[in-house]
Length: 253
Length: 331
Ligand SMILES: Nc1ncnc2c1ncn2[C@@H]1O[C@H](COP(=O)(O)OP(=O)(O)OP(=O)(O)O)[C@@H](O)[C@H]1O
Ligand SMILES: [Mg+2]
Image 1 (cartoon, protein in one colour):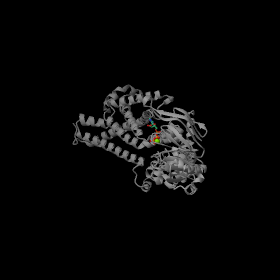
Image 2: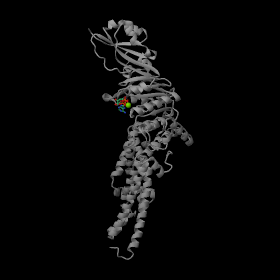
Image 3: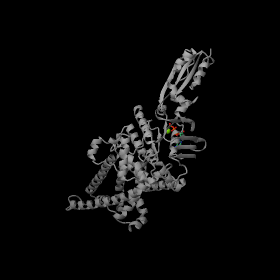
Image 4: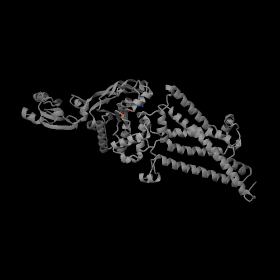
């Protein structure tokens, strides 16, 4: 049992919490990058291979489209339904293959990505389904290719919703990252567990909770602001907008 | 310019199948504005969407700009689509792009350079009168302005054909008029062929050179307005110039005279009473200007039976007027 009256308590806490925060940000950051890289195309594929979708008949075959959609949907549901702690253990061989070891902070990124990808893919799917099909038709009527429709219609139009979905995804990655102590992943969750539970110091728990709360809050606020800025829907005066954002985005993505 | 031959399309299968288009033949001449009217569910949208193959018909051929589209590969079809502009009832503008960005989309697709895109977008925005709004996002525009952006986007890549599916149906009458004027201007100045879908007869009267009536997936009538109007029993003509239900008057004959071209300003009624001694009364009349020509119908009541009025009717017909006996009272 350590408590704030112990000499060097606060210096120790600062050091431990800083390391923990750094590990959490590292894990979450890399896992997030991987999640976007894989989850975004996966979300697009989920919507695209649906009936009437942009890729509903890959290689000219509707059957391939149906099969792809079913498989992707199944994989995403599977990924979302298995508890994280089990995922972590179940994919140890994969983690070993990718990182070389299944122990440590870097190794923890693999299971974190594995659970976040299907989560984010669903968010992307939902965001894309909100797009008016008329926009796709308009682009098609102009002679746009599928790739152009994805780049110039799907992603920019869904971006505000995708950003909000991303914030939710980050929150859930942070959430899961608290459990990676099991594979010696470190991070803030591990700090709370070791110092709060095993060494029984409520102060550590409190500090960790506050830091995580602040991070999540910052992300949510930033995401909401970015989404609003991107959506162009509820903007004030055009003049004011011009002042706030000189040289508005007029170019294509 | 646009030619549909034997085009059929049905949705669903088995007993619940809906036949949206039933062996449709349609000919739209170079440089004309062609209107398709019909009731809701008649297949109008399916028809126009099949012209650029947004909807692929089950059978038949579609020829636009001298190319048969149904046999083209995806890549070839995309090239042809650039020569077929389309505007939509709900505008379908990208909310993520400014007005100029929306217009530039049409040019990005063709692979035009950034500077050229910008130049062309500004040029076409000037044509539709939206230069001042180039940097604004669509949510800040009125419906009429949005449709102007839609038109600018459709025209940016210099198509030869413009398709319009109920482009004015979401607009008020005033705005509708200004958009139709713009379509007319484009048609005249750029020589664009326009195929438009509408459920408003007024739209046909205001801008169309030719029209077709679609009913349950079939074309019932089609042709230039001037000839439709002088066709006996034309439903389109009747819908264009509605005179209401024919009243029943005992002991009198009700006739309708269709005027078109030069006959509109002839003193027909005065002649009838002078040459045949008939007390003609006017029950209703509509005169409109169609394609710069006066056209319309007048409903007259002549005392006596049709046999009695025969001489007068024959006289009118001999002058080249279209006369229909629509009501005969029995004595
Ligand atoms: N994608 C579709 N799936 C199933 N049925 C369809 C589809 N599109 C159209 N239909 C059916 O085909 C018929 C013609 O529809 P269409 O939209 O062409 O009519 P319309 O003349 O444009 O009607 P409106 O004036 O209401 O727009 C209707 O019975 C409609 O229900
Ligand atoms: Mg329709």
